[in-house]
Length: 251
Image 1 (cartoon, rainbow, N blue to C red):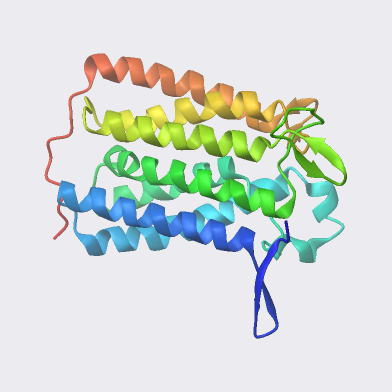
Image 2 (image 1 turned 120 degrees about the vertical axis):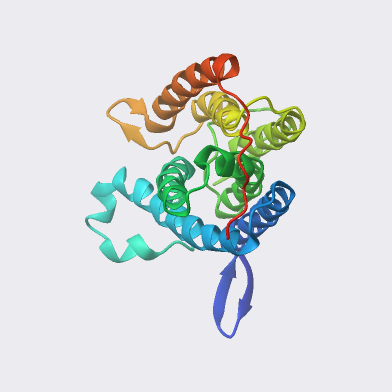
C-alpha cells in the first residue's frame, strides 16, 4: 500500500497521519457526548482535549525515541519526523494519565470519571490508528502461511496490526456494554487497561519490531504491570468504592 494518501500543494499527506487524526477526532466526539450526558461543561471538555491530545502525542513520541536512542542519537533531526510513524501508544497513555490527573486537580473534577469517559474513544482511536501501521508497512509479525497473511518486502507475515485493531474494536464494544451497567467510578478505564493489555501482551509476542528493555519486550512488561495493578484496583473498588454522585458541572 502506498503510504502517501495524496499530495496537497507539493506536501505529501500520509495515511498514517490521516488515520491518527481521524481516530483522535472520533475519540473527541465520543468524549463530548459522554460528558454532555453527565452534565460536564462543554468548554471544560474543550480545554481538556487541548491539553490531553498534544501531551499524549508528545509522550508517545518520546517513549518511542527513548527506546530507540541508538538511532535517534545519530539522527536527531528525525525525532520530529512523525509522518513516517514512531508513536508508542503506551507512552501516550502514560503521558495522558499524568496530564489528565493534573487537569482534574486544577479543575477540581473527578479524574477517574474523566478517565471513564475517555476510555471507549481511546480504544476505538487505537483500532483506527493501527491501520496507519499497515500503510507504513510496520508493526507486523513474523513469517506465516495463513491465508490472511500480508506481504512485506516479498515475505508473507502476520498482520499483527489487524489482530490488534480487531481486538480493540471488541474491547470498545465491551466498554460500551459495561458503561450502561457501571458500578463504580473508574471501572471503565480500569477495564480498558486490563483488556487492552491482555491483547497487547499476546500480539506483541508476534511482532518483529518491538521496543526492548534488554531481552524483554517493553510493551509486554508494561502490559503485565498494567494487568496486575489495574486488576487489583478493579476488584478492590468493586467491593468497596461507591459510584460518583457529585455534580459534574463546571461554573
